[in-house]
Length: 70
Image 1 (cartoon, rainbow, N blue to C red):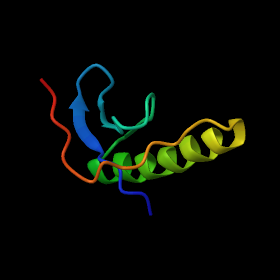
Image 2: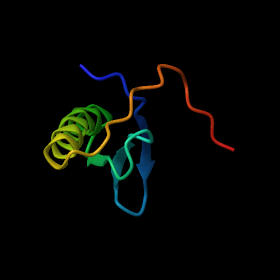
Image 3: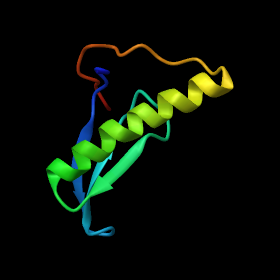
């Protein structure tokens, strides 16, 4: 299991929960419920990592601490 931070929030525009993985650029998922968004985010993380491996791209190590946004 990967230990990347996942940020989940409600989007009125999309009418869904959005789950972003800030440490993996472009890794975003959504779901009708908070739980579904989290499940989809976990699948998106695996797909992101599998794709990076396939193309020989670097995979960032999880920072293991809360990210801070300004």
